[in-house]
Image 1 (tube, rainbow, N blue to C red):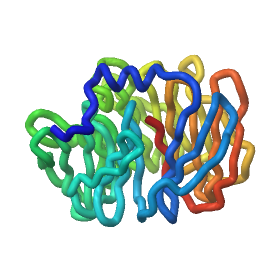
Image 2: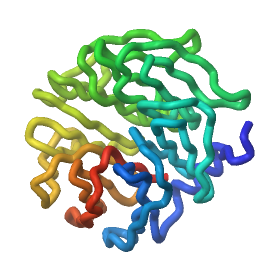
Image 3: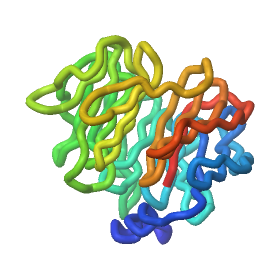
Length: 273
């Protein structure tokens, strides 16, 4: 086990902390860190220069897929994990999972990278779920299993991400948004590109009409105050964070409207630890 690995209890401490939060945006010039206090957006800076393709957070850590390697941000340091060039990254049971252009999927553990299988055109990873062109795959003890759908753009599995029992599984596809109940159940119609959810039931998705949020088991419009496309959403215990393709950073607490900060950099994703 690497000396920067966190135990589940340590990650819960990070998840419960209050005060200023640092949010990480994957942008064209590298990873940008944004200081946020409640719903107030403070300063931002390029924290690490690289060519990120994906970014994801887990309490206490952030993982970044780049054109050279997978990076793990821990204690404000960027650690190379020797995966090689990666296209997407996620967390499964508090461990980093990554995929490359060939479709190789592996999980980082005590003995380095454990190969999980190969899937063509992997688009997103979260928890036990893999989003791919030909559907959703699930990570199990015996490898990867296809579990339905088609043309999947994004997935969310908060229970599998954190190693807990809470949270609904979602899949965003070209035909709509689905949640996993007795099979895949319809949630929204139309092309859905992004979905993000938390164990406490909060969730956001980007569908044909823009950003929506899950309120009292109903999906309702939750537009940002910009005529731009949201490409990434992340949550922590206090707020939701979003970033647009044009590089506008957005934050919204449960009690306030969206606040924005123009970063001026093309963005691909956002993460919080």
